[in-house]
Length: 435
Ligand SMILES: [Zn+2]
Image (cartoon, rainbow, N blue to C red; front, top):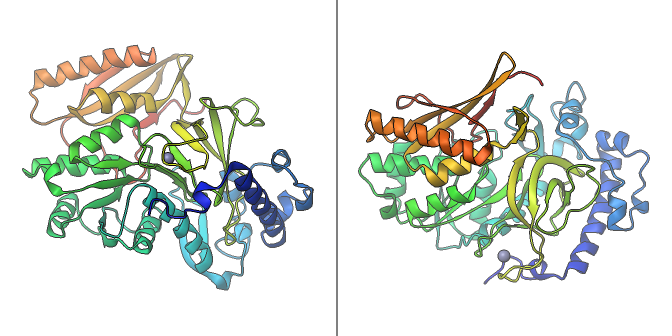
């Protein structure tokens, strides 16, 4: 079976548009009736007036800030004006990580949770996960949504799921070997960390027998994806999603860009200047996402602040859904340093593709007087001598200058100085204050 849902995944564009428009209208009516946020926000919008895709653009965006605001001191606790159902129907709680402020609390009913899992089944199936896979999830199970969906969706697919919580990296490697695990889902940099730790234990990651890995929780630059494939001799897949939107696009066997899970989601990719026009193939746009089937927590036209490149409308796998090529970064992460536009992802790509000796890094931007300074802190392979480490540092500064047009100072740190992440890596620290 090639597709998880052979019918929806190969529907012609006109039919997908028709279904999504209908779902969108229904969601607007529902939101206005049941969520106090949308009752207020969409009071001047009539669902009946949304007759075309262009009409959708009349509906205002929803921002993360608003979600926070509508939970503060608004009943019922703790979901406030975001709740779209009776609180008695909520069966599970999740929250955002709160890395950019107060977390958003997310209510799920049994029905909405099943909807999330079903959309995730598409992501896993597309990435080649099958009932023969024994899937390991190397993640501390907690209040965040990450991996819970992967866990339940893998079960629904018929895989055998092994939860990898409450174990350190060594313990996880031992479990992988003990259980002859052949597939994983995890944070890309943590997956790399497992490979490094295995090597330190004298185990070749290739010998673990991992066939497939799905990346989750952080961006997966192409260079990192290839590096993981090489380290484990496996196939590595990406997906994109967030707690507010759910996972809305995944990578197929062609491994070129991400398929939007239609018609579960309406995904718009709008020009960065005016946020009003859909961009053309090959252009960068801001991702606006509407999860069309979730009622417990209706979110309409959520502005993700993520910038992606629009992909082609066809794919060799035969799926007809829209595609996103590269995820360029977050609008907030793209910043100006000494007047030059700078995306931390460029450095991630550089480190992962050209510097296998660098095991961890962090970029710190400070302002001294009126001058912005970039410091790259790196940890290198412990097998390297002091002089060799210094050569790596000099080479990184040189390549950084060529790639970004900005100078940086590179400092070699001793082993274990820099933080390791199994979720939401934060390798870019802008210490210049507000500007
Ligand atoms: Zn495809």
